[in-house]
Image 1 (cartoon, rainbow, N blue to C red):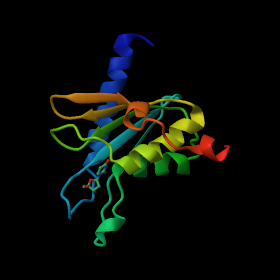
Image 2 (tube, rainbow, N blue to C red; image 1 turned 30 degrees about the vertical axis):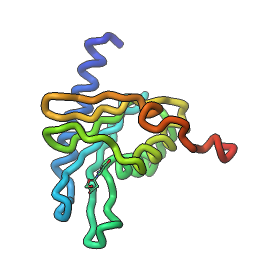
Image 3 (tube, rainbow, N blue to C red; image 1 turned 60 degrees about the horizontal axis):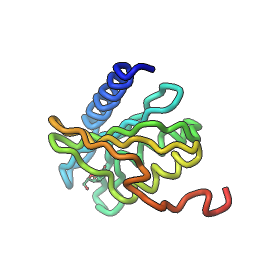
Length: 141
Ligand code: THU
């Protein structure tokens, strides 16, 4: 894959996260989030945040995307994550970092996490966002 293709892939993943954000159900916070996961086979899996009148039951976009991907049978191969929360970049919450780590560690990858705003995209490896993570290895898996 050339650098140009990779850049195009990343731009497409960010667009997928922005599109997923359109479906956000966030009447309480009004903070709409979309997430898109890209896998080694080229597949993209997206999701949005889904809130609940019992506020604490609200589900984040990244966690929903991981649940969707694992529900389709995916167990690793996670290469890139894009997050869209509006005009400014938004970091993934701690719980989402842990949930992403579970799927990533099953395939031994350290995905690039892109928090996309309109003018700025913040990029970090998941291992930077969650150093020394607890995961399946700690339980002997
Ligand atoms: N949210 C996400 O979807 N992902 C995150 O990583 C941070 C927060 C959602 C949860 C809630 O619906 C809204 O954003 C405000 O916290």
